[in-house]
Image (cartoon, rainbow, N blue to C red):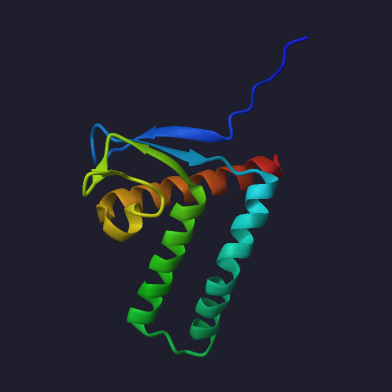
Length: 123
């Protein structure tokens, strides 16, 4: 009988920064719970602002970027091939000091992994 070795991460080569590879978490039941708890408050605030017609563009952009930071802190496991101010790039220093294009690419990859997992659950 063969065992299946499940990898809870996925390695991706950056398109925006050639030579950089990043590792993101795959969605798991525990990961879904943790991420849901982390984004719930910001999501509720965003819905509140939109429902009240109080959709300040700056406020919405700030909320979106705060959600992106949560996605990166939750889903980014490792970055290879990039240092920031002489230190290895991490999920905590990348959003603060790293290239915005790479952050956006990582968030997109995490969101795609989440969506893929949701579609897989339906099948």
